[in-house]
Image 1 (tube, rainbow, N blue to C red):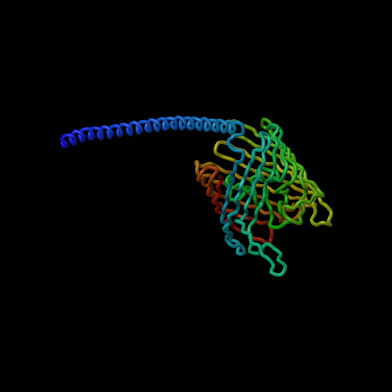
Image 2 (tube, rainbow, N blue to C red; image 1 turned 90 degrees about the vertical axis):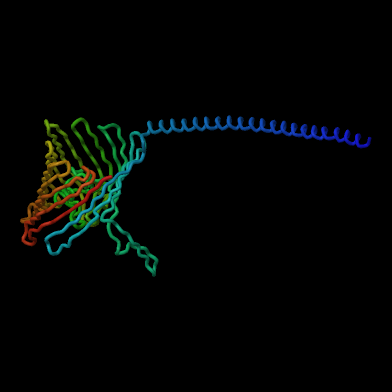
Amino acid sequence: MRNKIMVFGIGLILPAFFLQMAWADSSELQILKEEFNQMRQKMETMQIKIEQLETGQSKVAQTVKEEVAKEVAEKGPSRLSWHGYFGWHFEDETRNTINPTFDAFQLSLVSKVDITEKMDLYSQFVYEHAPFYEISVSSATGARTLDSRSSGEFTVNDAYVTYTIDEKLKLRAGKFATPFGLWNTLMYAAPTYVTVKQPGRDTFYDRGSDTELDAYFFGRYSMGAWLLGSYDIFSYDFYVVNGRTTLAQHRDDNRNKAIGARLGIDLSLGSSSLKLLYSRYQEELRASTTSPFFRQYTNALSLEWTINKFKLTSEIEDSQRQGAGMTALYVLGQYNLTDKFVPFAQFQFHDPDKHAPKSKTSYITGGLAYQISPWRAMLKFQVDRVLPDNAIESDYWRFLTGVAASF
């Protein structure tokens, strides 16, 4: 009887135990399902937020793009632009007193800033002869001076602001290369001409070897105001600038003012074009702080004629300075033989004193320019025959090779 009761009890307990286990498993499963559903809802909520953020970012990005595009359209692609040019040459002569020379003649950095729609700032920085500057400090006084090992020059050729009313009237103020002749404003821009050095460099644009002879016919640089413009085939330049002194190069003498003008006309003659310029420069200058002023005035005519592949450039000037009459002339002819090869020939003449006998010097030049990239990168070869008309110097040859590049 006892055994039957025990069996009956176990029979009751076991089903209850398994029923409890099954109930427990069912409750845990339900909890897991609920947690899973909650996680899924959270993930869906997070996905919605992510999509909202991405949409917002897209709208922001689109707004930024639209604002940038609007600004570019209103102000142009850039308010500051840079370009420049480089020139290097080798020179040798048959004179025994002159040694062959390599020269990284110039590196020019040119910037232009558009301040407003009508106003811009232009500047040109020129590094001449690969400058190197070393400063010496005195052990006794601590004074700082330019060391004798220093070489080359750094020049600010141009730094001026231009206000453009229209193409017929522009106002400039600052420092600038004097608008005289064809090439003074392009004196270092070697990629713009076929000769190794500036056309007429030994005569019309002669700069001499000392302060007295620097820019003998007119001031290379000017500090002042400049009025310019063009209309149809006509162009003009008028300027009033500080005077010069022969005491030092590029130094102003504010007791005097120089004035000048340049008038131009561009004509189309069938298949040819002709550009004519008249330039005038006048001032009073002095050789010392105590000497009286003396007047100098210079007149010049410039011509640039192009027909098909041939181009002729010529300039002549006459000047009166301290009672001496001076004249200079050059004629340059060039022919585009192919897209790459441009042979050229140049004749120059310079007389620093027309009243003195045997004072003039002539130059006969032949050469070839190879355009690696037309008017951007050029290799030049040039031979000069120099003919001094005096009893001291003999005729001699010069040999020049140059590289010019712009960017």
